[in-house]
Image (cartoon, rainbow, N blue to C red; front, side, top):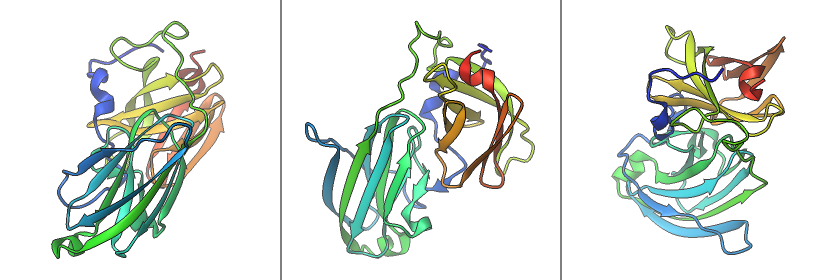
Length: 251
């Protein structure tokens, strides 16, 4: 299964996802801050003030298999936060405005910088309204490390152990029947990160643990079914991927 198309896979992780909730409907530029934990600590608490459209991006380094927890309190009812997966600039895997919840807890599907974007709804931002907020961020759990190149050779120029084309259905793209895909294997037992690759780069990341899909970088619910050596993963009602066992295990 180690094959690669002519598409430039080396830069795929730099592109944003295209099928989940928009992070905000205003300017893309945001002030960036790195979240760091004190030695021995598993969480950090940040206090800040936001005015108008001065969004703030808090970057949190985390890995597949770890759990990200966020608690958010704000003085303004329209002060919200989103969680963006690695590489995304304007598309979120979680939005407090959409859920109505001011907290988040999720198992992470991939390695990299997750962005917590703090922002005010555009009508309030245009009125230059302000908000004081407290953001608590915690990362816990043992990372599921990728197999090294000596354990499982990589596709040249990429982080993938293999690439393939799999049957898929994508939201708002009815003509698409198959997707390029890459896999980062994290064990020999079907523990891996599956990445579907759309026309604009990485489309979806799904974490498998011992052959079972357990989380994805999406707000919509993940469900799956099995038939022979194939796992069909559905994200919401209009997204589907058919993934063979051998792609995950290398067997």
